[in-house]
Image (tube, rainbow, N blue to C red):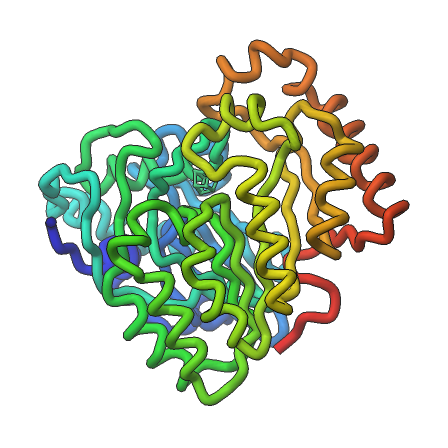
Length: 372
Ligand code: SF4
């Protein structure tokens, strides 16, 4: 396997050098440089926060600030739009000085399905909670997964040949050690192992056990870090005892339909509907609070789904489809389900059915009441 050094984070740093964390730009302090779905630069000014994302310009959504190779945009944060735009412009100026040399230095890495990567920050500050991703790229390969269109331009930038979503994984093999250090030194906040760039219990986890070692690091920390995990994979049951022993843990599964034939069309390599319900039932039996995420919603009996979830969990997150990605052919058999109207109606139907059964339907990033 090839070994690379925290390459996206390293690229992010090199692009804006000599700027580094702690420096002040346009009156705001650069507090973090990370790389996951994009190259990301976090700034704070007083109580206001700005997250500036830098993505390859080719294929990027229209952004107001760009360089020869990159587009810059402001994602989330509480900073006023004009101030965030000024930060984008200042970062762009710095990137223009570096980008040609940095891009010329990038060499194609050997193409391998699983690459071991090292370095980078373990915990990504997502404003109020941390994201933790043991893998980048996901062999479950759901056709609608929005991560694919975000990650592929970054892989191309790093010199890797295009490869179908689901065929490659970057494994952060030293993440447990990096995490243990950060657990001892960073402010306590909820940690989410919830797929943004990869499922934490995809197949490679059974060989590498990076997720397991991260959970062990959280268990060994001297503070009780609230920790959430979300998966579509039955391998999480291997770690049931470990999660059950954490003082503040929540375990969730994504379940977009009760119909396993429909599930197979969209998520052929994910756990079956029955397996996912069993995951929730077994963790609930072990005393671990559980939740389910229904997003997007796929065809199937919504009332049967609400009934099934009511038996195994007390909290559900609902959301509509946010883009078909490569799932177009799967949707061809369910033309209505791809429309915003159908998605909104089905979310409303599920919400009503769940609430009528006493299930909490939450809308934020964390279960109600979960704080540091
Ligand atoms: S399991 Fe999650 S991260 Fe993996 S492909 Fe499916 S939606 Fe994407």
